[in-house]
Image (tube, rainbow over all chains, first blue to last red; front, side, top):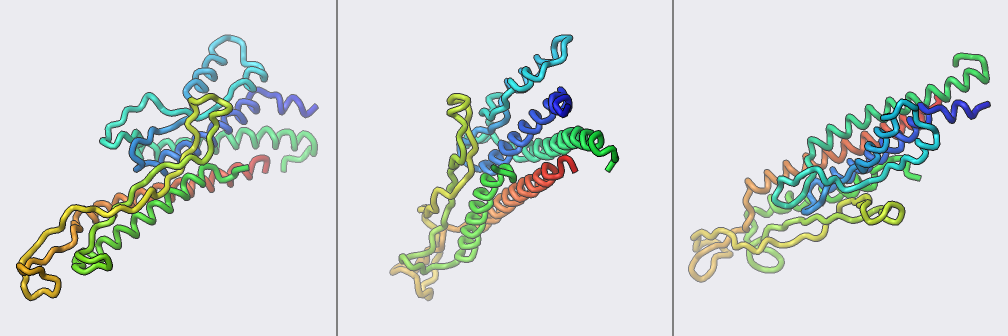
Length: 130
Length: 143
């Protein structure tokens, strides 16, 4: 009976994206920490995660829970960014700070979605709004 | 379990930047020191950083995953460039020709370095604050 909530596409997708958001925060923390390490290349959540996610929604059919479970965010070196500094470091601190605040809003939004799903279930069980 | 994400990378960076600030303070303090424990004028110290791998996911995703890296002080080296000299025969550290060698500390360089270091420190502090807020949000799920 609880399964429909846990199996709902939105809930599953939100938890998957929440994983990715936490992972991105780790990557940004690493990038800012190494902003002055010579030769350091910035890391980010691998772009094939975004690509896989986009292809899930490309068709007319919504993705199944098993499709979402197959998505696996992981970190990878950002190969798209060019280094403009003489020490070969590709981190730009302003870009990282912007990415961090953006990621935080994403994280807040996703926790809200997950929270709402759980609250809804709680309401169904207890019959009370709070 | 790592509730405060990325905090290990940030703390390493905070430590390193703090060391750098200490070394800059030492350089500025000794900008006119003509007598040091190892003889001769004070020589400017330079901090170098290196990255240190915290966690590698390479087993799960192949060698492409770079893993998380913090930063640490690789070492404090002495800048060997000779300092400026000036003529002052009455100076206690003057050589036979009456020339005194000053430390090779350039105050302008040190000030610029000081600003860079404190900005880097602030940026890392911002990350730490963000990590905390994200963790608090995560703990509020379902409340």
